[in-house]
Image (tube, rainbow, N blue to C red):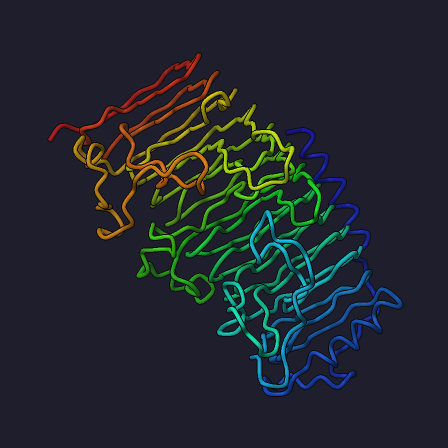
Length: 491
């Protein structure tokens, strides 16, 4: 903890010194109109080029700035003032976004492999800031997926902000709405500060991939269809690079209906994500996991109407020294805690199996959690999850399942979606998700292929009687329990 506090202090001082008053370039002076009809990206890019020569600030005042790809430069601050909307322009027969650059996608999907096909992008930059109180809006334009086969039209974009191999980056104050596959894809970005940012998007919120010395604080990310704040260490850079020395604090993640966090209504009419299970919207490590996760702290965060905390490594990465504390969860639609060491191995030849070691989770309160998968810790044979300490955990599960549910593995989810995808075990080489393990034979904790697990000051209870036992363990060693209590009401 001391290490992370020092990191936060020194990093903040560095960034504050960089963000002192600079000369300003108003985009209107370069011909931008801001009426929501004219394409303003050429004028804004001209302003960015001008600002780069002196390290100036490019200002978007109140207005609707319709744009294709914007190109960030070193030393430049791009500021969206209150009332400014940077809006993704629709692709036409004559105009579109920058093309996706060539990059191998052998070990990660299309979205993680390209940065140029974005509303805003930068590569090999330093000292870059995106700030202000404005909105970045990709509604109806930024794509959630990959190009269609044989597509011959103008290039389109699938993310709002993409940075590759950058240093000293600050993102502060802005909001993101409906930003496609990623609101932010930040790959190989070191010394990164994200604070007071809101994202309400139709797939991933913040993707932090192969980044070192990162602070994410005071943010709210609402992503029903995908993960809210997700750390990864993929092979997208063409080399393994860890994600390490990361602090996530005072953040709120959720799976409300898309767009209803920013408009304040926070509705819950959509009960299913594209994978067939409940709303996503969580904090997660993984799935892409080649370079390693080390020295990660997650603290003072809330999860609402979404999936629980997920710590996953399945592609050969070591996950170690992960500290999670002071978390509150409400209305959780799968495992409140999911720790998974898998064997997907989407990696080049020569990578060894993943490892999980030294995980600390403490001071966690969970209300109204789905009981299908319990708190789930799972390694693989000959590669156990090791040295996990969970203490001061209080979980209220919904309960209500039977032993027949476990035996039959019926496609039954009585809490969110009665017609949900059938929850049957799919194996250790598949995509890791609690539902991939099937309905568990316990309602509280299910632990398999693990050793040196310490549970202290644990209270588990159900709202409705559950026929299953509170604990299930398979191929485990040295599982210690101290001051563990359970409450499962009788009918």
